[in-house]
Image (cartoon, rainbow, N blue to C red; front, side):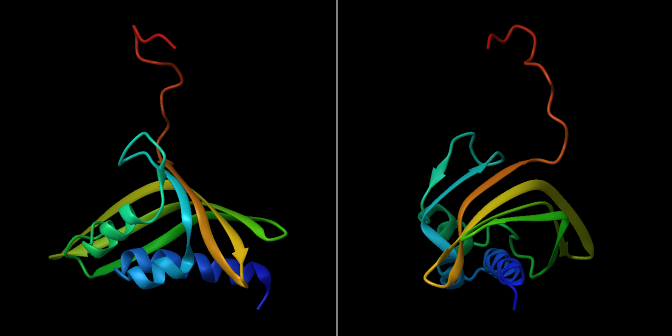
Length: 141
């Protein structure tokens, strides 16, 4: 398997661990000192695994739904020795009681090769719609 194929496989294993509520696999594919920004949770950086392990164990991503799929739209991989940056738009489709809903946002994930395995060390998520170019009226920057 090529290094690029290993990176994509590590990323998909990592994502499945979140959606399939597998905290053991999440730990195996994520660095202990993980840092991330999730615009829909808090505007501040989150550090470490405890918050996400709580979310995974309680099924926060899918609720009670068991049927899902995700697609990585316009995926890109940039590799620099033992560091990889993957960027894409994540589209999550969830089926519940005869209805399918979709959620979309942009993601960047940084992976490093550690003891022969690729692990996610940083995640940045942003809305998949255009943010305003200027601050709301009356806001001082």
